[in-house]
Length: 500
Image (cartoon, rainbow, N blue to C red; front, side, top):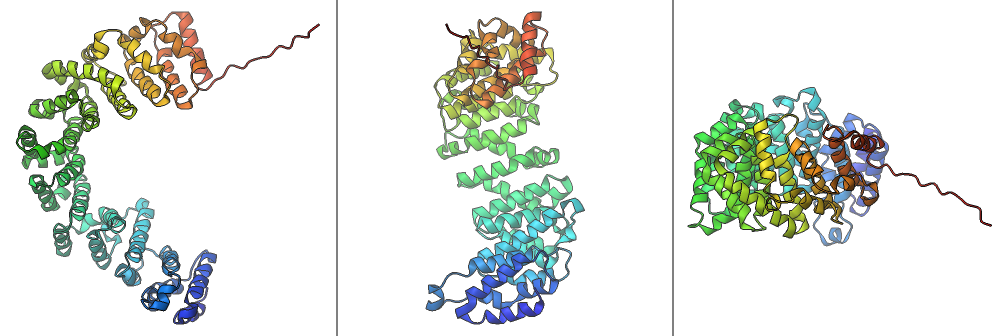
């Protein structure tokens, strides 16, 4: 495609009757060209004739086909040949970035994002985007449409760090905080993403984080839930946790839980609060378990409640809470009776909840009992004690075996995954040996038909094969099973017998 041919077609676009045919011809020629001349790309991207095809509002134009798809394809192909290192990039994209059609603006944003992502290995710095482009992207951050705001946020997360001291940047971010809740949460998410990198960056965006924290006193419960969700990842960083403590965030949230009876709507916050504290406790167990007892008691209240709207968050929170050996010890020291009651509740839930929640409960228990590769004798003893609470303290391995025989593969797989975490400990394998028929069930290949269930059972048997708890004959059976693989099928030989 020559520049002369391009100019000729752009002139043809002024003729309305043949406009769609001309656009189709341009798109077809662009698709045929593996590379484009720079002059052609520049000419098309800055051509008023291309953009004017989207401006017609008269009856004749309305009756004709919409040229949007053709124009979008042409611009997209041209943008894919651009480079962030081009000094004239802001000029080439300006018309698209300022276009009244949001779809055209989105094309330009996604082209910039794609080019940035392609250069990640090249150590993209803050100068990868010019100030002129950055202004357009900051404006797009405030767009209500997700397909505009999302790429803008992704771009800014990659390049904004070196521009945070510039006044036009802070002014734009402050303006965004006056927008809708969707836009505000987008800005909060951007600030948290930047803040996670270092305490120095957090200090530069603390005006945004402070604004987010002030929203926790908002009457909008959904907004508060979204903010808690966003703040979780910040709290997982030491410098982020220090910041939140200085702002007394944990005390504010804990007080909400204590005063929940006075503000019934705050009950809608419980799943978000559970997730927030659960995630933090996975990295700071002592701070949460000993420092915020009302929060831990709220978790156990949720587990006891039987409220299916809260149980998923409660299951996940207990799993996060028990992620470290230190947390297991602290829970046994301070909340042993609550743990006992909760595990007894699990037994009831596993029998009576819908399948989706049963699987969530099984996954939660798997996380509670899973510690690898090493674990202290103290923690192993505590986990053995906790396992004994399942099924009212009797026949607990038989209780799990019954679920293994469930005809639904998802329940079977969830149960086998839990059993695999139990078999990490000598007491778990001993419980298996004392359960009649369980080992025979595991070794029987004829009763499994689902591929994922076969693999889950194989993983369990592989753990047993690594144990020294069995006699030589059983060990040989286990090792043979492992060596044959998860999907082995014994061949059947038909012997033909000649009749009389």
